Length: 265
Image (cartoon, rainbow, N blue to C red; front, side, top):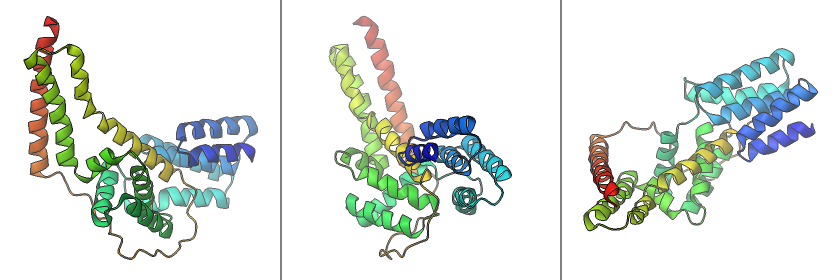
């Protein structure tokens, strides 16, 4: 029980890799246990991706073969695969693009980050088996933290803010080459693009926390009837594709100019 509690704590903290290792080690050391199988399966599912989803299903099958009808395993399996397969036949958790789209939609409707996070949390509690709602709640909670206004801007206006980041990057490199500035000045170019790994890291951590949550409990009524429905994510528009092509071209020109200037320094 102690080993299972430790693995569960790691999983709920979003440390899915450590949770998997702890649960697997306990299974090897102490023998089969339904709680450990449940945590290990949920930890694989929390990673997302076809490989981990397949491993999660294998873990649940092994556990249910050993402990047929165990309520803990059945509840965990249903929480991971039942609603996910109903909403997404591929069995995969909401992708990063879906996560970004949902956060942008709710921030546009609700406005205030803390209010959006609060409403999303209530919505997730009202639908505890819904992975997409849980991921959205964790995402908005992460974005509402102090100091993350630049990340929220990137979520709210991905085309404008994202283009600005890369235009800044290209502009700095071109300025260094054109003005014959010290090469070290080019480090300022990273101030824009660095927001992307920071944002993706926050999104990934939010996904892990949401998909590593405990099996669904009973639903509770949500006080937010006006919470926006989460539609299917639309395909990329022609404007988005054209903007991306122009920005990538500008970045390529800037990199080529800087590379030609660099050997002369």
